[in-house]
Image (cartoon, rainbow, N blue to C red; front, side, top):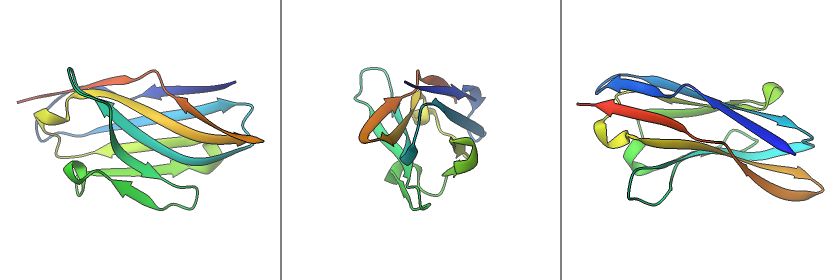
Length: 118
């Protein structure tokens, strides 16, 4: 089993910053991509940002230039630095980790609430 522990959500005013962390632990042989998704009330879960094991990144257009994804492979941890936050960024943020132990598996974090007030 793989456990993902997220932290760093909270309430912030528009224009502010937050940093999310997601640490993976368990019987992981290797981690491939890591990423962040979000789900606002009444909406489908959407991709925010992903990062490959080699460090290549991909961002949703809505967060480009404001959010930065990074990872620490030694700690099996992925981060999301969120700057210039807007009220429309309000959502539950979930981390996702694609990992291998023979086969490829996908694990999701429990979610962390991010609320941006105007």
